[in-house]
Length: 94
Image (cartoon, rainbow, N blue to C red; front, top):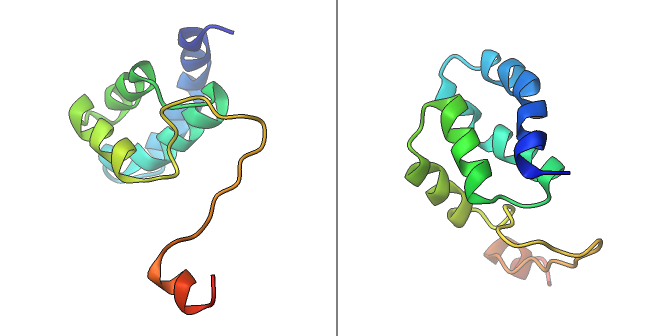
């Protein structure tokens, strides 16, 4: 399915998500997760869609996407393995 059609379908859900927060910009992470789950990755179109709903500049949405490793900017396979490399995981023996 076309990415723009998926985002149009998500508009109803986005309206509900944004309504849950006192400030629209607080919904950035939730909307990114929602869109990534449906589209499969966070593309520039997804970033623009999140920007539209949260009134946050696209560049700031992109900064969030590149900061957090949970957001994928490239398609991934059906299954993928991730390793925890943080200090807390290392202390626990990983």
